[in-house]
Image (cartoon, rainbow, N blue to C red):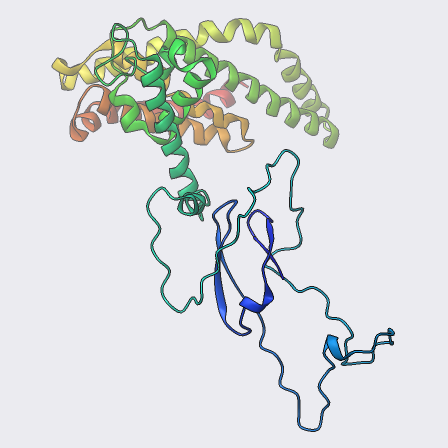
Amino acid sequence: MTIQCPSCGFEREVSEAAIRPGKKYKVTCPRCSAVFHFALPEAETPLPGTPSPAKPSEQPATPQPAEKNETAEQPEKKVSAVPHLPTEQAGDDPLPPGATIPIFPTVDEPPAEKPEGGASAKKEEEKPRSLWERWQRMREHVREYDARQEQDNGQPGKSSAEGRPQGAPWESPEYYGFWGSFSRTLLGVLFHAPDFFRNVRCELSPIRPILFYVFLSLFQMLASRLWSLKMLNELTRTTSDPQTLAMAENLMKSMNLPLMLLVTPFFSIFQAVILAGLYHLMIRMVQPDRSDFSTTLRVICYSSAPLVLCIVPMFGSTIAALWFVAATFIGCKFALRLSWGRTLLALLPLYILMLAFVSQIPALMNAGA
């Protein structure tokens, strides 16, 4: 009889005489250590008066055509939980001579607990069942990677007490790499804002945070231009109003890409400094001993991480703006070591003024038109 592992497809011949029909057996694969169960169906009892099939030894020497319900020779039985897979893959090493699949007498008893770190337990851990478990597993892998990086690249002169560089990952590209520092900063702000902003305060130069804000502003500009042009092109194909067509054409001409690429960095730097100054002023009025302009500037720059959502049409920009406000609030609270009440008292008037200004933009545009 051939027994096939449902995990890796490994096969092994086992004597059928050692297997009792109707009893369940537990098998451990010698290749991948996966545990699975199988059982042979019980032999059917012939009805009274029904002749039993002839044994192979009693069959005549000359081959005879097999009749229904009578078999001259039983085909090889094969027990498998999955379709047949090739036994040996390209590059696989065969099992050593004499390797066998251990067969246990029964599975009525509860399965023995496997030691932690075993191959089968490790294989089960590698199959998360939900999206949340997958996310937790990814975070564990990131922590393990950080631990290995600390052991391999730890430099006492440039590292903090925990072995990691000071500040945000974006400010240490020589430690994480360019894309590693950029992605870790994005994920930290989006999904782990309290932990991220606790370590954002440092004595490094603010040039790297400002560059992060500039990159995200350029991405927002390109995404907005893409969706605006697509909407205007659709409008010109569906409308027949001459005024609407003229307005759409003027807007499309005003979206000069080289000019926007040249102006956006300077405008974003100016915007980041002005916002940081307003936040710093409001916090200084509430708790002057905790205010720090450099830290506030870092909070504003790194809070622009949600601008990556501008790639989503229609609602992406709105969600990014709301997420930016929430990130700046959390960032000021944890980076400057403020209480929730003090943070709310300092920033709530500023948010109200910003909301009032944004609500007046449509009226100003209609008045100008």
